[in-house]
Each structure stands twice: as C-alpha cells, then as structure tokens.
Length: 60
Image (cartoon, rainbow, N blue to C red; front, side, top):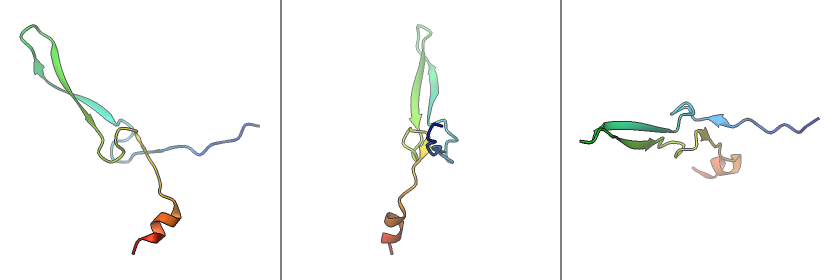
C-alpha cells in the first residue's frame, strides 16, 4: 500500500485558479494585449498553506 500524502487545500480566495489574464484591447495589427493578475492571498500557487500550531500560539 502506498503512503498517502495530505491533499493540498485549495485557496478559498481564488478557488484554485491563481492566475488570470485580462484582455486590455487589441493592437493596430490585430493582436490582443493581456495583463496577468495573480491571487494576492496564495501568491499564484492556488493552494493555502496552513501555519503550524506553534506559530499561531506565539502571537498575543
């Protein structure tokens, strides 16, 4: 039997779609211009990392 690794938690802010491209229009020759926008919460990974309990308890 293979060891099971814990499933990565999907970011609740972006629902697992961390990078989106927004179209800003077209150039005179017909090409599209896009901007990439990444999720500010997970920083483009699509998953949320939980903090160890020791770090959570350290704050006041």
